[in-house]
Length: 403
Ligand code: SAH
Ligand code: SF4
Image (cartoon, rainbow, N blue to C red; front, top):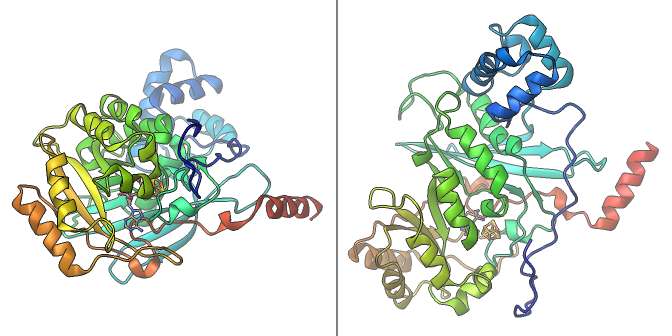
């Protein structure tokens, strides 16, 4: 993790200290393993090398194409192999603690993750399904909380942070398919699956959990498994410049940049990571993004904050800055959360801003807030359990041990 030395002091630290190291449960889940890792696990239970490739294909199909929830279902796998696997492994996904359904059809799942510190509910993340007429989008988290502190983001106020594993990231998509009954083909308003698109826009900064996000997205996009094409997966970053190129080269998904301001002074405040990677460097990384083209544009997200970043001058500078980058602009009405210091821009102002950007040649849809009634909209995700202080957690741990 990068150091904050030499950076301007502010009330909020630029980056928070990550949580203790993750300790997996006694029996690990196979969810999130690549083909090579599955082969190694099969070797561990005595499957001879010459059979491993075939067995991996079978397992892959059951796990990621059919969504099997137990080894018993895997009827094409020999009984011995199945029982060998069941002795050592599970196919568990993250546990669903709560499911909320909004009056607009948006669904939010609260998932509990093992913390390894003796506390049952120490770690939780959220995952949101947003149905639209032409698509169904799943918004996936990459971390518990976020080490960054964007001033308008609820997740950023969360103290505890840990990286999710690849299995926990893939697991969110699998939970959503389980809950929506979305494993088998059927007719939907937009093809044969409800979930057609993935956005890495839940809790956390995906480019600060690069390896796990990459491994997970390679599994999710594999067309012999879950099969969601890379073109339908969007990774959103607040601007971790050194990892942007890697995302293009090693993952190959669509890129979204949380820009939110066009002047460094303001962006330093809204997205403090800007002090480390200022706008000019960020935009250069976008110009160099492998695979960006007019057919595969980079999305620039811009949250509309009343009187802060929503003037026509801002719109003009935005258009100027993005010159030469294959871009689309996504205007997001600010979603307030309890205690937030900003207000959403007036609708009229959002329209004016959008019109200017549109007339300059950019597609600039205003993202309609979805699932507001269940606090599922952009930037509102934040779990409750992190509110415990270290001392409170220690006390609870002690209680758990004397129970
Ligand atoms: N950490 C990554 C991805 C998660 S945030 C990133 O920052 O890009 C997903 C999007 O929601 C980002 O564009 C973020 O800036 C935006 N967002 C955060 N809080 C918001 C809020 N309260 N209202 C509207 N959008 C918000
Ligand atoms: Fe983290 Fe993104 Fe929220 Fe910023 S906007 S605090 S990077 S989740």
